[in-house]
Each structure stands twice: as structure tokens, then as C-alpha cells.
Image (tube, rainbow, N blue to C red; front, side, top):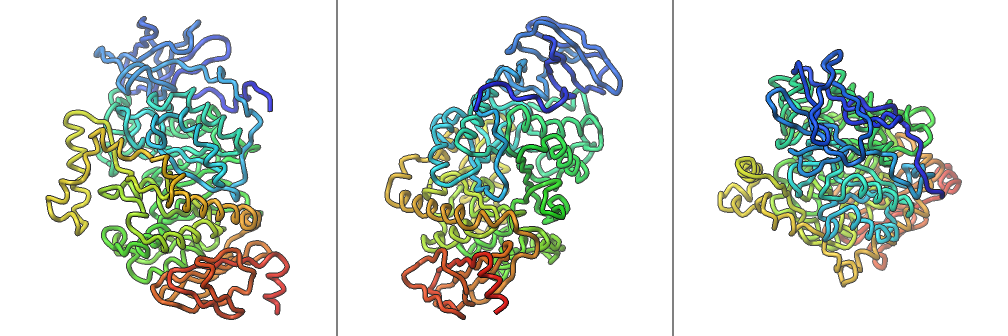
Length: 613
């Protein structure tokens, strides 16, 4: 591949500091609440011109990359650019002019990978390595590529308050956090990943802004909906055209300027549906020649975003994070039924079989937690429309003590569920450290100060009041303080574990499973369509599901109980069995020991012949 600049795929952005192509920089801000606005640029104050509909603009010549700027309100307060590409310091200080065309890409011809090849590895940049930077993460890419991972998914990197945080309280969603290495560091990581055949996906937050450093309401109160709130802050007025541009263009910006391969949109049930549709449409129109993958987190279990075209094409969003799969697996593995796990306490084997065969477990049934119906039928979607996981940042980090699954489940159960995750036709996601049985916690951490820090700490402890283990006030007080730097440091991965005992064994298991997936299952997924899954059994801890993948048939049988069970036969060559030495695979039945799994694949032609027979 040759070095050079990729062609810019986007027209100038509506917000922020944009190079005009003739050596000038145009600064633009929507501030309908003001009659006047000043640009402080390189230490000089310059009046901005007020145009129509509350837009302010100023064009300046000879502005070098790295020049500091801020917007000065009529009362003299200087605020950062909400669409800043970079910050000079924290979220309260000046922004920096960035020329996106200065980076010379070493893999400019990269166009991505098809979705059916995706094996996702979610990571938090700050705790993935000891240094906690984009540059340090590059050092681990060979480890991931060798494992069989094909995509890394970064938790949000838009600048948030302080240097420690999950990223979901960001306030500058165009600016890669300076603590991680800023724009240059992120581009270097993406470039290095592409050189190794790895896609890079980014988690983005369009449902709220963080509580510290968001100044938009001071000059654009109409950006928010008066009197309406999300669980995390004021609701956003997505119906306003400048607001829509802010978010639609943000999605396009990450994909064009950083050559990312996709986005995961956080909690889209708090984003306007029509805006989501617009984002999906604009992405497909703008990048027709690249493999771009859009996934969503949405506890409504809806399907309108993920519909497929007649030939299986993706006109909008590619897949949904399948929390149902995780929650059922967690209940089976741990026996926990507190809080939201109560929805999955009844008939977990049946719910797991449905999630594997069709996608969601809840497809319109009444949720005990919600007290009303949740979800809608989803079997018409292909299995690749669902991203499954046993662990992720939410499901680990939102536990009071951040325990990972190895601390809660037996090794046998963990091996079986991992094989189920990696060998089903759904798209699998691993959480950083899962591949070597990391037992360090992943805790909730922030870097707030003063009253806000106190409120976050107290709120974190109130959050668990509904869980039986924390109704005792003393237990709640032991929950780690999110603002203590030690909470952040305790969450960093231990990279000595992959070479030791249990970590090495786990790593080898996952590497073998992913090799099996890559060689035998992934090639069938492009032809997978809706209604491909069939439940063969789901009783007394047995889960038996078949999938029709083009002309082939994939069969999974699992015994998740503590006693030997009989399951429907595979009628297919065995791909994988755990434990292999005790599995009795017969033509019509499989005699399965406690906590076991067997997966078989009848290739194209053979599956059809057997079905006819």
C-alpha cells in the first residue's frame, strides 16, 4: 500500500473549526441565545458575524495547526468549541485548530472487512495497558490478531472531564481525549490496526452530555428540551436542525477523518428514532465502497433499525447488542436473579434457546422488571444482526465490585458458555482480558472534583439499594469510590497472565475456537437469512438449536445442568465438543455429561441430502 492522504469524503462540517482549502480556517458555532459572540484566537479577540438562525461565523487566514481558540460570551466567559477536534488541556480550557489532512496514512487502501468475519474485542483505552494510551494499545494488536480477533471496539474516546473515566460522560464528542494521545494517537492506532487486518469500531454517545464541561446551554438553550431528562442529564432536542447536524456529522466525521470501520451507538432508546434512521441512511450514502458497520444498544428489543434488503444488504444499522443473551447466560452461570436478572430467572434454558435461534428472548412478552411488554418478533433477522457477549464494560463494570465472570462461575460452565458464544452464528464480542481469564475487576471510575465527585460516589452506592446484598448500609459503604485513583488503577489489565497457567490455557482454548469459527462457520454467514434458527429442545438444562446457513446446517447441543442429559442428535460431523472424551454422539441422540457442549456442521449439500432422507 502507498502512503498519502485519503480523499476527503465529506463537505465542510456545520460546527467547529474547518479548513476551507485555501489556507483559511472557518470557525462556526450555533448560538441562538446570543446577540453577539467573540472568537478568541491565538490570544486575539475577534468579533464573529451573526448569520441566519443563530449561526455565528468567522474566517481567518494563516492559522497554524495547534493554534488555541475559544468562544467568548457577552459576559466575558470563554468556553471551548463543542465540536473541537482537540483540546489544549481539560474540557474547560481552549480548543485547538487541527488540520485533518496532515496525517499520512500507511494503509490508505483499506476498505474494511465484511461483517460476517467480525469477532469483536471491546477495550477501554485507559485500562487496556499500563500506559493507557492509543500508542500503548498498538503494542497489543499482534496479540489480538494472533488470537483471531478481527475488530477492536473502543469505549468512547471523546474528551470528558478529567483523565479517568469510561467515556460516557463526554462533553466534546469530536475530540479524542488528550489523556489517550489526541487525534494523532487515535489515527496511529487505526492505521496500525488496519495494517494487521483489524477493523476499528468506536462507541459513541448521542443520548446525553456529561455533567462537567458542557457549556452549550449558555449560548444554545434550544439544544435541550426544557423539562425533559434522560437518566443521565437533560434530554436533547433532536428535532432542531442544527442539533441533528451536530450528531449526524459527528458519525460521518469519525468514519471519514479517522477511517474507522464502524460505530456502536450507546443507549439509542434515548435518541430520536428518525435521527437514527437518518444517520444510517447518510452513512450508507457517504461510504458506498467501504465496509462500514453500525451497531446499537437498545433495551427496547426493536428491529426497525436492523432490517435487511432482499439480498441481505444492510440499508441502515448492522446489528444490535444482545443483552438478553448475556443476562440469560449470567443467570445460568451464577444463579443471580437480583435486579434486571429477574427477567431471566424463569425458564433460563428456554430463553437461551430462543435467543440463540431467533435473537431476542423477549419479543413482546411482559418483562417482570418493566411490568409491561418488551420487544417484538425478531426471527426474520439473520443471526448476524445480533452481537452476543458474556462480558462487556456495562455488565462487569456496573457490578458494585466489578467482578468478572471467572470470579462468579465455575471453570466448566465458563468453557461451555464461551464455546457457545464463539461457535454460534451470531457475532461474538469479548471484553478485554476475557481471553486470558483476567480476574482483576473492571470498576466504575471517574475523575470529578468537589460536590460533583461526592454526588457521584453517593449515587453509585444508592444504585445498588435494590440488590439484597446491599440493603445493609455497611455493605454499600464498601463499594469502591469512583473518584479514588486507586479504583482506576485496580481496573488495569495484568498482562503477565496470558503466559501463566490458567491464563495460557484459556488463551489457547479461545484461539482454537476462533480458528474453528474462521475456517468453518464464518464462510457460511454471508448467506444466512432470517428464520434460520430452529429450537430442537429446551428443557431441564438442555439447549438444542439448529441453524440453516445457506445449504449447510449448524447444530449446537448443550447440557447446562448438573446431571447427565440426553439431547437430540446432531446428524452432522462434530466440530467441537467439551468435554470431548465423555461425549457419546449417536445418530438420534447425544448423551451429554453435566455442563457440556457439542457443535456439529453438516456442509452444504450434505445437510440438504440428509434433510430429504
